Image (cartoon, rainbow over the protein chains, first blue to last red):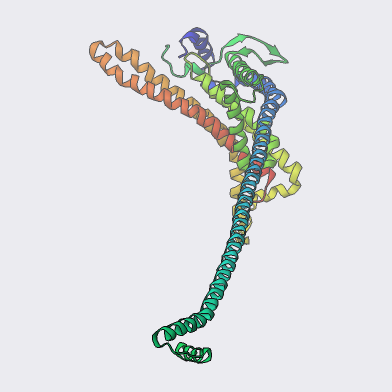
Length: 178
Length: 249
Protein backbone atom coordinates (compact mmCIF):
# COMPACT_ATOMS: atom_id res chain seq x y z
CA UNK A 1 0.00 0.00 0.00
CA UNK A 2 2.71 2.46 0.86
CA UNK A 3 5.42 1.29 -1.44
CA UNK A 4 5.53 4.67 -3.18
CA UNK A 5 6.46 6.29 0.09
CA UNK A 6 9.15 3.79 0.85
CA UNK A 7 12.18 6.04 0.66
CA UNK A 8 10.89 9.03 2.61
CA UNK A 9 8.87 6.82 4.95
CA UNK A 10 11.70 4.57 5.98
CA UNK A 11 13.99 7.52 6.29
CA UNK A 12 11.58 9.15 8.74
CA UNK A 13 10.83 6.06 10.76
CA UNK A 14 14.44 5.13 10.75
CA UNK A 15 15.23 8.49 12.24
CA UNK A 16 12.64 8.52 15.01
CA UNK A 17 12.14 4.79 15.35
CA UNK A 18 8.65 5.12 16.86
CA UNK A 19 5.28 3.84 15.80
CA UNK A 20 4.13 6.63 13.42
CA UNK A 21 0.75 7.35 15.05
CA UNK A 22 2.55 7.89 18.38
CA UNK A 23 5.29 10.08 16.93
CA UNK A 24 4.72 13.35 18.78
CA UNK A 25 6.86 15.27 16.31
CA UNK A 26 4.03 15.15 13.76
CA UNK A 27 1.27 16.19 16.20
CA UNK A 28 1.60 19.94 15.80
CA UNK A 29 1.36 19.84 12.03
CA UNK A 30 -1.55 17.40 12.09
CA UNK A 31 -3.46 19.44 14.66
CA UNK A 32 -2.95 22.66 12.75
CA UNK A 33 -4.03 21.21 9.42
CA UNK A 34 -6.97 19.40 11.01
CA UNK A 35 -8.08 22.68 12.56
CA UNK A 36 -7.76 24.49 9.23
CA UNK A 37 -9.45 21.85 7.09
CA UNK A 38 -12.15 20.82 9.56
CA UNK A 39 -12.84 24.45 10.41
CA UNK A 40 -13.22 25.27 6.75
CA UNK A 41 -15.43 22.23 6.23
CA UNK A 42 -17.63 23.21 9.19
CA UNK A 43 -17.90 26.72 7.79
CA UNK A 44 -18.83 25.51 4.31
CA UNK A 45 -21.39 23.07 5.71
CA UNK A 46 -23.06 25.43 8.16
CA UNK A 47 -23.11 28.46 5.83
CA UNK A 48 -23.70 26.95 2.39
CA UNK A 49 -24.45 23.26 2.03
CA UNK A 50 -26.79 22.55 4.95
CA UNK A 51 -29.01 25.67 4.66
CA UNK A 52 -29.31 24.92 0.97
CA UNK A 53 -30.30 21.26 1.43
CA UNK A 54 -32.65 22.25 4.23
CA UNK A 55 -34.36 24.81 2.01
CA UNK A 56 -34.63 22.26 -0.81
CA UNK A 57 -36.30 19.77 1.52
CA UNK A 58 -38.61 22.40 2.99
CA UNK A 59 -39.65 23.63 -0.44
CA UNK A 60 -40.38 20.07 -1.46
CA UNK A 61 -42.42 19.18 1.60
CA UNK A 62 -44.27 22.49 1.28
CA UNK A 63 -44.98 21.77 -2.34
CA UNK A 64 -46.20 18.26 -1.53
CA UNK A 65 -48.50 19.58 1.20
CA UNK A 66 -49.81 22.23 -1.20
CA UNK A 67 -50.42 19.65 -3.92
CA UNK A 68 -52.22 17.41 -1.46
CA UNK A 69 -54.43 20.32 -0.37
CA UNK A 70 -55.20 21.12 -3.99
CA UNK A 71 -56.03 17.47 -4.68
CA UNK A 72 -58.32 17.39 -1.64
CA UNK A 73 -60.02 20.59 -2.73
CA UNK A 74 -60.62 19.18 -6.23
CA UNK A 75 -61.91 15.94 -4.76
CA UNK A 76 -64.40 17.82 -2.58
CA UNK A 77 -65.48 19.82 -5.60
CA UNK A 78 -66.02 16.77 -7.74
CA UNK A 79 -67.89 15.05 -4.89
CA UNK A 80 -70.18 18.06 -4.67
CA UNK A 81 -70.73 18.03 -8.42
CA UNK A 82 -71.58 14.34 -8.32
CA UNK A 83 -74.01 14.89 -5.43
CA UNK A 84 -75.66 17.81 -7.25
CA UNK A 85 -75.93 15.78 -10.41
CA UNK A 86 -77.52 12.88 -8.58
CA UNK A 87 -79.91 15.21 -6.79
CA UNK A 88 -80.97 16.70 -10.11
CA UNK A 89 -81.42 13.26 -11.61
CA UNK A 90 -83.60 12.22 -8.69
CA UNK A 91 -85.66 15.43 -9.01
CA UNK A 92 -86.14 14.91 -12.71
CA UNK A 93 -87.20 11.33 -12.12
CA UNK A 94 -89.73 12.30 -9.49
CA UNK A 95 -91.00 15.12 -11.72
CA UNK A 96 -91.39 12.77 -14.67
CA UNK A 97 -93.19 10.33 -12.42
CA UNK A 98 -95.52 13.10 -11.28
CA UNK A 99 -96.28 14.17 -14.82
CA UNK A 100 -97.00 10.60 -15.85
CA UNK A 101 -99.25 10.13 -12.83
CA UNK A 102 -101.10 13.36 -13.61
CA UNK A 103 -101.58 12.37 -17.24
CA UNK A 104 -102.82 8.98 -16.18
CA UNK A 105 -105.23 10.53 -13.66
CA UNK A 106 -106.48 13.04 -16.18
CA UNK A 107 -107.04 10.30 -18.74
CA UNK A 108 -108.89 8.24 -16.20
CA UNK A 109 -111.11 11.15 -15.17
CA UNK A 110 -111.93 11.91 -18.78
CA UNK A 111 -112.62 8.32 -19.49
CA UNK A 112 -114.85 8.05 -16.47
CA UNK A 113 -116.72 11.17 -17.49
CA UNK A 114 -117.24 9.92 -21.00
CA UNK A 115 -118.30 6.54 -19.80
CA UNK A 116 -120.73 8.11 -17.36
CA UNK A 117 -122.13 10.30 -20.12
CA UNK A 118 -122.52 7.36 -22.44
CA UNK A 119 -124.09 5.27 -19.73
CA UNK A 120 -126.48 8.06 -18.79
CA UNK A 121 -127.44 8.46 -22.42
CA UNK A 122 -128.01 4.79 -22.80
CA UNK A 123 -130.04 4.65 -19.63
CA UNK A 124 -132.17 7.52 -20.81
CA UNK A 125 -132.71 5.83 -24.14
CA UNK A 126 -133.56 2.57 -22.45
CA UNK A 127 -136.01 4.32 -20.12
CA UNK A 128 -137.58 6.11 -23.05
CA UNK A 129 -137.91 2.91 -24.98
CA UNK A 130 -139.40 1.13 -22.01
CA UNK A 131 -141.85 3.96 -21.54
CA UNK A 132 -142.90 3.74 -25.16
CA UNK A 133 -143.24 0.01 -24.92
CA UNK A 134 -145.33 0.42 -21.79
CA UNK A 135 -147.48 3.01 -23.60
CA UNK A 136 -147.90 0.79 -26.61
CA UNK A 137 -148.67 -2.13 -24.35
CA UNK A 138 -151.20 -0.20 -22.34
CA UNK A 139 -152.77 1.10 -25.48
CA UNK A 140 -152.84 -2.36 -26.95
CA UNK A 141 -154.33 -3.72 -23.75
CA UNK A 142 -156.91 -0.98 -23.73
CA UNK A 143 -157.89 -1.84 -27.24
CA UNK A 144 -158.05 -5.58 -26.47
CA UNK A 145 -161.37 -5.13 -24.57
CA UNK A 146 -163.01 -3.20 -27.45
CA UNK A 147 -161.77 -5.70 -30.05
CA UNK A 148 -162.98 -8.58 -27.90
CA UNK A 149 -166.36 -6.91 -27.48
CA UNK A 150 -166.65 -6.28 -31.21
CA UNK A 151 -165.52 -9.75 -31.99
CA UNK A 152 -167.88 -11.22 -29.42
CA UNK A 153 -170.76 -9.14 -30.79
CA UNK A 154 -170.08 -10.28 -34.31
CA UNK A 155 -169.62 -13.89 -33.26
CA UNK A 156 -172.75 -13.93 -31.14
CA UNK A 157 -174.68 -12.22 -33.89
CA UNK A 158 -173.59 -14.61 -36.56
CA UNK A 159 -173.72 -17.79 -34.46
CA UNK A 160 -176.84 -17.21 -32.53
CA UNK A 161 -178.47 -14.38 -34.42
CA UNK A 162 -179.47 -13.09 -31.10
CA UNK A 163 -179.20 -9.53 -30.10
CA UNK A 164 -177.04 -9.06 -27.16
CA UNK A 165 -176.72 -5.74 -25.65
CA UNK A 166 -173.47 -4.02 -25.72
CA UNK A 167 -173.48 -3.84 -21.94
CA UNK A 168 -173.73 -7.60 -21.54
CA UNK A 169 -170.90 -8.19 -23.89
CA UNK A 170 -168.73 -5.69 -22.12
CA UNK A 171 -169.48 -7.38 -18.79
CA UNK A 172 -168.74 -10.80 -20.21
CA UNK A 173 -165.49 -9.66 -21.81
CA UNK A 174 -164.26 -7.96 -18.74
CA UNK A 175 -165.07 -10.99 -16.58
CA UNK A 176 -163.33 -13.29 -19.09
CA UNK A 177 -160.35 -10.99 -19.34
CA UNK A 178 -159.75 -11.23 -15.66
CA UNK B 1 10.82 -3.41 3.26
CA UNK B 2 7.78 -2.49 1.23
CA UNK B 3 5.92 -5.16 3.16
CA UNK B 4 6.19 -3.38 6.47
CA UNK B 5 2.52 -3.05 7.53
CA UNK B 6 3.30 -0.01 9.67
CA UNK B 7 4.82 1.93 6.88
CA UNK B 8 1.49 3.10 5.46
CA UNK B 9 1.04 5.28 8.53
CA UNK B 10 4.27 7.21 8.04
CA UNK B 11 3.87 10.93 7.74
CA UNK B 12 6.11 12.50 5.14
CA UNK B 13 6.58 16.20 4.63
CA UNK B 14 5.48 17.52 1.27
CA UNK B 15 6.19 21.17 2.05
CA UNK B 16 8.32 21.66 5.19
CA UNK B 17 7.13 24.66 7.18
CA UNK B 18 7.95 25.95 10.63
CA UNK B 19 6.44 28.74 12.68
CA UNK B 20 7.37 29.87 16.19
CA UNK B 21 9.62 26.88 16.57
CA UNK B 22 6.85 24.34 15.87
CA UNK B 23 6.62 22.11 12.86
CA UNK B 24 3.59 22.97 10.72
CA UNK B 25 4.70 21.23 7.53
CA UNK B 26 2.20 20.39 4.84
CA UNK B 27 2.37 16.59 4.97
CA UNK B 28 0.68 13.69 3.23
CA UNK B 29 -1.77 13.73 6.14
CA UNK B 30 -2.55 17.41 5.47
CA UNK B 31 -2.96 16.63 1.79
CA UNK B 32 -5.59 14.00 2.52
CA UNK B 33 -7.37 16.26 5.00
CA UNK B 34 -7.58 18.85 2.23
CA UNK B 35 -8.79 16.20 -0.23
CA UNK B 36 -11.38 14.87 2.21
CA UNK B 37 -12.76 18.32 2.88
CA UNK B 38 -12.44 19.46 -0.72
CA UNK B 39 -14.19 16.46 -2.26
CA UNK B 40 -16.96 16.28 0.35
CA UNK B 41 -17.69 20.00 0.29
CA UNK B 42 -17.54 20.18 -3.49
CA UNK B 43 -19.87 17.20 -3.80
CA UNK B 44 -22.40 18.49 -1.28
CA UNK B 45 -22.38 22.02 -2.67
CA UNK B 46 -22.30 21.23 -6.37
CA UNK B 47 -24.91 18.47 -6.36
CA UNK B 48 -27.39 20.74 -4.59
CA UNK B 49 -26.69 23.84 -6.68
CA UNK B 50 -29.60 22.99 -9.00
CA UNK B 51 -32.01 23.05 -6.00
CA UNK B 52 -34.13 20.58 -7.93
CA UNK B 53 -37.64 20.05 -6.67
CA UNK B 54 -37.28 16.59 -8.12
CA UNK B 55 -33.74 15.65 -7.11
CA UNK B 56 -31.17 14.31 -9.51
CA UNK B 57 -29.39 11.12 -8.41
CA UNK B 58 -26.43 12.96 -6.98
CA UNK B 59 -28.63 15.49 -5.28
CA UNK B 60 -30.54 12.67 -3.58
CA UNK B 61 -27.26 11.36 -2.18
CA UNK B 62 -26.61 14.72 -0.55
CA UNK B 63 -30.19 14.84 0.70
CA UNK B 64 -29.95 11.31 2.06
CA UNK B 65 -26.78 12.24 3.98
CA UNK B 66 -28.55 15.27 5.39
CA UNK B 67 -31.64 13.36 6.45
CA UNK B 68 -29.64 10.45 7.81
CA UNK B 69 -27.65 12.67 10.18
CA UNK B 70 -30.66 14.87 10.96
CA UNK B 71 -32.74 11.84 11.98
CA UNK B 72 -29.84 10.52 14.02
CA UNK B 73 -29.48 13.76 15.94
CA UNK B 74 -33.20 14.40 16.34
CA UNK B 75 -33.89 10.90 17.64
CA UNK B 76 -31.17 11.03 20.28
CA UNK B 77 -31.00 14.69 21.28
CA UNK B 78 -34.47 15.94 20.33
CA UNK B 79 -35.24 19.07 18.33
CA UNK B 80 -33.17 21.18 20.76
CA UNK B 81 -30.13 19.26 19.62
CA UNK B 82 -30.62 20.46 16.05
CA UNK B 83 -28.51 23.55 16.78
CA UNK B 84 -25.53 21.21 16.76
CA UNK B 85 -26.54 19.70 13.45
CA UNK B 86 -23.78 21.37 11.36
CA UNK B 87 -21.14 20.03 13.75
CA UNK B 88 -22.49 16.47 13.84
CA UNK B 89 -22.95 16.50 10.08
CA UNK B 90 -19.40 17.80 9.50
CA UNK B 91 -17.95 15.20 11.87
CA UNK B 92 -19.85 12.36 10.24
CA UNK B 93 -18.99 13.34 6.69
CA UNK B 94 -15.38 14.20 7.51
CA UNK B 95 -14.71 10.88 9.26
CA UNK B 96 -16.63 8.87 6.65
CA UNK B 97 -14.77 10.46 3.74
CA UNK B 98 -11.39 10.22 5.49
CA UNK B 99 -12.03 6.52 6.14
CA UNK B 100 -13.17 5.91 2.57
CA UNK B 101 -10.17 7.75 1.13
CA UNK B 102 -8.03 5.42 3.22
CA UNK B 103 -9.52 2.47 1.34
CA UNK B 104 -7.66 3.44 -1.84
CA UNK B 105 -4.32 1.70 -2.16
CA UNK B 106 -1.38 4.08 -1.57
CA UNK B 107 -3.66 6.64 0.01
CA UNK B 108 -3.02 7.96 3.49
CA UNK B 109 -5.71 7.44 6.13
CA UNK B 110 -6.18 10.60 8.16
CA UNK B 111 -8.15 8.85 10.90
CA UNK B 112 -5.41 6.28 11.51
CA UNK B 113 -3.62 8.80 13.71
CA UNK B 114 -4.64 9.06 17.35
CA UNK B 115 -3.97 12.78 17.45
CA UNK B 116 -6.63 13.44 14.81
CA UNK B 117 -9.31 11.27 16.42
CA UNK B 118 -8.40 12.60 19.87
CA UNK B 119 -8.73 16.17 18.63
CA UNK B 120 -12.17 15.45 17.22
CA UNK B 121 -13.25 13.62 20.40
CA UNK B 122 -11.98 16.47 22.61
CA UNK B 123 -13.85 18.93 20.42
CA UNK B 124 -17.06 17.02 21.14
CA UNK B 125 -16.46 16.56 24.87
CA UNK B 126 -15.26 20.15 25.20
CA UNK B 127 -18.45 21.35 23.55
CA UNK B 128 -20.54 19.10 25.83
CA UNK B 129 -18.83 20.56 28.91
CA UNK B 130 -18.98 24.18 27.80
CA UNK B 131 -22.57 24.01 26.55
CA UNK B 132 -23.67 21.87 29.52
CA UNK B 133 -22.39 24.37 32.10
CA UNK B 134 -23.46 27.39 30.06
CA UNK B 135 -27.02 26.15 29.65
CA UNK B 136 -27.64 24.34 32.95
CA UNK B 137 -25.12 26.01 35.27
CA UNK B 138 -24.29 23.70 38.14
CA UNK B 139 -27.40 21.72 37.29
CA UNK B 140 -25.19 20.05 34.71
CA UNK B 141 -23.60 18.13 37.59
CA UNK B 142 -26.90 16.26 37.98
CA UNK B 143 -25.55 14.26 35.07
CA UNK B 144 -23.38 12.45 37.60
CA UNK B 145 -26.22 11.81 40.06
CA UNK B 146 -28.86 9.56 38.56
CA UNK B 147 -32.29 10.06 40.15
CA UNK B 148 -33.88 7.30 42.21
CA UNK B 149 -30.64 5.95 43.62
CA UNK B 150 -30.53 5.13 47.37
CA UNK B 151 -28.53 7.75 49.31
CA UNK B 152 -26.03 5.17 50.50
CA UNK B 153 -25.03 4.35 46.95
CA UNK B 154 -24.73 7.94 45.71
CA UNK B 155 -20.98 8.40 46.39
CA UNK B 156 -20.20 5.17 44.59
CA UNK B 157 -22.51 5.94 41.68
CA UNK B 158 -21.12 9.46 41.31
CA UNK B 159 -17.61 8.07 41.24
CA UNK B 160 -18.58 5.59 38.52
CA UNK B 161 -20.42 8.27 36.53
CA UNK B 162 -17.45 10.64 36.70
CA UNK B 163 -15.08 7.90 35.62
CA UNK B 164 -17.34 6.98 32.73
CA UNK B 165 -17.56 10.63 31.69
CA UNK B 166 -13.78 11.00 31.76
CA UNK B 167 -13.32 7.85 29.75
CA UNK B 168 -15.67 9.12 27.04
CA UNK B 169 -13.13 11.15 25.03
CA UNK B 170 -10.65 8.28 25.36
CA UNK B 171 -13.07 5.63 24.16
CA UNK B 172 -14.43 7.91 21.45
CA UNK B 173 -11.00 8.62 19.98
CA UNK B 174 -9.41 5.22 20.55
CA UNK B 175 -12.36 3.36 19.06
CA UNK B 176 -12.07 5.14 15.72
CA UNK B 177 -8.28 5.19 15.67
CA UNK B 178 -7.85 1.53 16.68
CA UNK B 179 -10.48 0.24 14.26
CA UNK B 180 -8.96 2.02 11.30
CA UNK B 181 -5.37 1.21 12.31
CA UNK B 182 -6.05 -2.47 13.00
CA UNK B 183 -8.07 -2.89 9.83
CA UNK B 184 -5.37 -1.38 7.67
CA UNK B 185 -2.60 -3.40 9.32
CA UNK B 186 -4.56 -6.64 8.92
CA UNK B 187 -5.28 -5.85 5.32
CA UNK B 188 -1.63 -5.09 4.66
CA UNK B 189 -0.41 -8.24 6.42
CA UNK B 190 -2.73 -10.51 4.45
CA UNK B 191 -1.99 -8.71 1.21
CA UNK B 192 1.74 -9.06 1.98
CA UNK B 193 1.37 -12.84 2.22
CA UNK B 194 0.31 -13.02 -1.42
CA UNK B 195 3.63 -11.96 -3.08
CA UNK B 196 5.63 -13.78 -0.39
CA UNK B 197 3.85 -17.08 -1.05
CA UNK B 198 3.82 -16.59 -4.82
CA UNK B 199 7.59 -16.65 -4.87
CA UNK B 200 7.59 -20.26 -3.64
CA UNK B 201 6.60 -21.78 -6.98
CA UNK B 202 3.38 -23.59 -7.90
CA UNK B 203 2.43 -24.66 -4.37
CA UNK B 204 3.02 -21.14 -3.19
CA UNK B 205 0.80 -19.67 -5.90
CA UNK B 206 -2.01 -22.03 -4.98
CA UNK B 207 -1.46 -21.27 -1.30
CA UNK B 208 -1.55 -17.54 -2.04
CA UNK B 209 -5.21 -17.89 -3.06
CA UNK B 210 -6.14 -18.13 0.61
CA UNK B 211 -4.70 -14.74 1.67
CA UNK B 212 -6.05 -13.29 -1.58
CA UNK B 213 -9.54 -14.39 -0.58
CA UNK B 214 -9.00 -12.99 2.89
CA UNK B 215 -7.82 -9.70 1.44
CA UNK B 216 -10.94 -9.38 -0.70
CA UNK B 217 -13.18 -10.23 2.25
CA UNK B 218 -11.28 -7.86 4.54
CA UNK B 219 -11.59 -5.07 2.00
CA UNK B 220 -15.35 -5.46 2.09
CA UNK B 221 -15.25 -5.57 5.88
CA UNK B 222 -13.11 -2.43 5.97
CA UNK B 223 -15.64 -0.56 3.86
CA UNK B 224 -18.25 -1.55 6.41
CA UNK B 225 -15.96 -0.46 9.26
CA UNK B 226 -15.27 2.84 7.49
CA UNK B 227 -18.97 3.62 7.47
CA UNK B 228 -19.73 2.07 10.84
CA UNK B 229 -17.06 3.99 12.72
CA UNK B 230 -18.21 7.29 11.24
CA UNK B 231 -21.76 6.34 12.27
CA UNK B 232 -20.70 5.32 15.78
CA UNK B 233 -18.73 8.53 16.23
CA UNK B 234 -21.71 10.58 15.08
CA UNK B 235 -24.29 8.77 17.23
CA UNK B 236 -22.10 8.94 20.34
CA UNK B 237 -21.63 12.64 19.68
CA UNK B 238 -25.41 12.98 19.54
CA UNK B 239 -25.84 11.11 22.83
CA UNK B 240 -23.19 13.16 24.62
CA UNK B 241 -24.77 16.35 23.32
CA UNK B 242 -28.08 15.08 24.64
CA UNK B 243 -26.47 14.85 28.09
CA UNK B 244 -25.45 18.49 27.80
CA UNK B 245 -28.96 19.54 26.77
CA UNK B 246 -30.89 17.32 29.20
CA UNK B 247 -28.48 16.48 32.04
CA UNK B 248 -30.93 14.74 34.38
CA UNK B 249 -31.19 11.07 33.54
